[in-house]
Length: 213
Image (cartoon, rainbow, N blue to C red; front, side, top):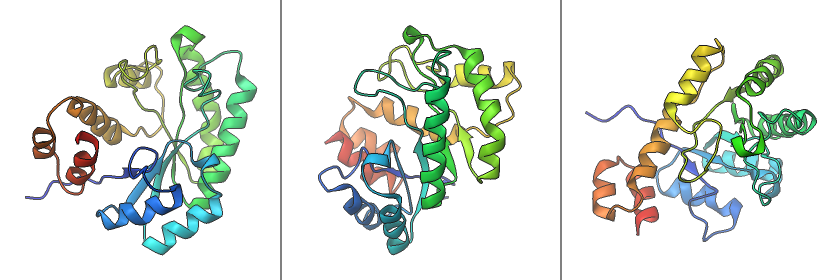
């Protein structure tokens, strides 16, 4: 029986040998019908991305909201108590871009504990943004980022993400399936290519082949 799994190609991490707008066609040729990106805002205008999606019959399923000063080490500002203005500006930019390319989900990055990330602040800001997001047809997503890749992230595991949602009765759709796939991919790192590919399903197997060879 074929697994009931939908997978998207992250164009910030895959097909990086090609210019950004060319990656949509490469993903389509490898069997993907959905794509996502970390921070597409500086990669290409929304109008150009929308044209590529239409040309290849694809859907952009997720973008991250701008994370603050990424080069300076920030990994989101939504949970930083003194960065309310930056958080609101980040969401505005993400909502406008997402709407222009027909993307229904925006991942809101919380931030790092060592930079002051606060769970209560994060939850309050998600609640405050929920109405505007719903009006724009956008689901706010919360993802766990593992401590190996992002040390100190506010939500370092699926268990922590679920605890935040349940403890605070956060009524928001959570991208649990994508997080789980991301955690599985992290486990593949360091394993031999055949071992990783054996665990995956097409077209994910082809993506893994690129990452493990």
